[in-house]
Length: 171
Image 1 (tube, rainbow, N blue to C red):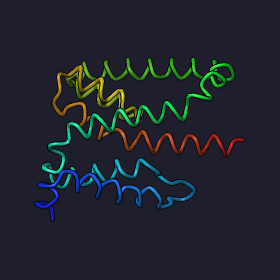
Image 2: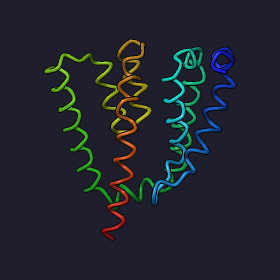
Image 3: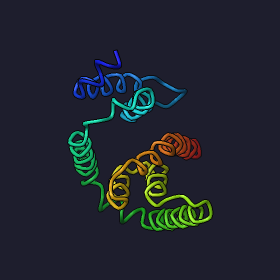
């Protein structure tokens, strides 16, 4: 089966999307992974056989563009209202991101970890696909940023879900 998937990138893509959609529907207590289920299935299949991720450059680029586009469309109408109501919270978030970036750079220098991998770590923990694209481009391509992203993305998703759940309990 892996040989068939390795020879058919489009089939693999649709299998990941379909299986990921199903995984996203599975409840884990009061939460579901939703669209992130496709990422987890893709990570699993890519980990099983590295041939499954080859020849997907165009799909990766189109997927990133569609992701950013749809997030922008969905978020656009509430952007200005959010800026007005949540300015202090957004400023605090920016400070936290700057601190995380500084800690990532410092840890990288201490441990001797390369920039592309560090950029991927930072992008993954923040679950930011556009940051992954920027880190990959800044690193001159390669897979270092994607590996760093894959290592921290699951933790970023789970941590984000837990924090939102805890915040909702407090209300």
